[in-house]
Amino acid sequence: MKPARIALAFAALVAACSSPTTTPAPSDPYPSCSNGKYVLDDPSVIPNGFDTAACREFMKAIPSIQTDAARAPTVIVPLAGAVLPATPIAKFTWTPGQLAQVDPPSLWRQLRQELVLERTAQAADGGADGGGGLTGDAYVVIFRNVGVTDGGSDEVLRVMTIQLELTPSDAAWAALQSAGKLEVSVYGMRFDNGTIATGPFTTAQPRTFSIAPP
Image 1 (spheres, rainbow, N blue to C red):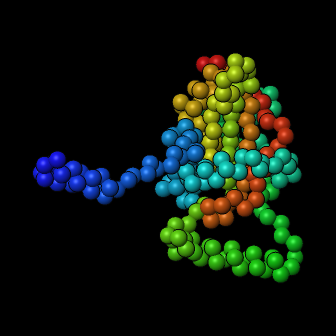
Image 2: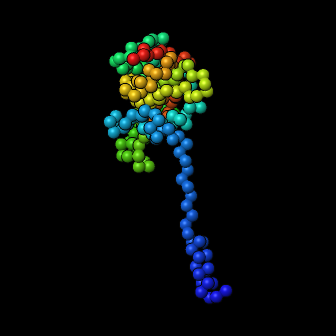
Image 3: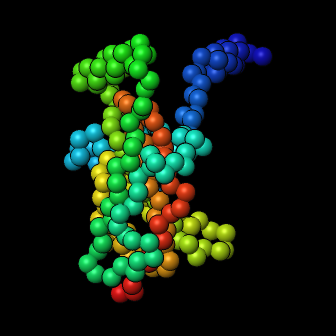
């Protein structure tokens, strides 16, 4: 082999060996939290609202959802079996539930209170790692189509919020209206600096209702 070709081959080998290898970024295990499929509070409008990070925490906690009527939120509106009028758009409401952690009186309670105070101070400063998370009670409201029998998804709408009421958008109301017989479940949980501290809790029986056609 001629010296020029040897030099070119050697240069190509060096370039191949020195080229940085890129590792593809891991896929998001919960893309629905960021692709607009779910309705989330806007933290810029509602301080400390239910954001995408809190959504992912709820998704991770789904296997540990507890059925506990004493602690779970209870739907107030609509009443069971109600047929809501087509207009105006209804406001759905629910109770806050008993989401506070009940700690036994002891040194453990004192230590926990000190930890909460420390985390609160960190959140006020932007968090120990540069950012604080949701702290307080939060709710996931899921509307399902009772009549789905073809193996498709029965979920029509999912809203994640720190509020105790929900007035659907025009588009969401139309989707609920066209679904036929519906049931709504509310999952309540308490967050501490972005982590679910207690819950999620829900009741055993969803609230069923329907919406009159337009």
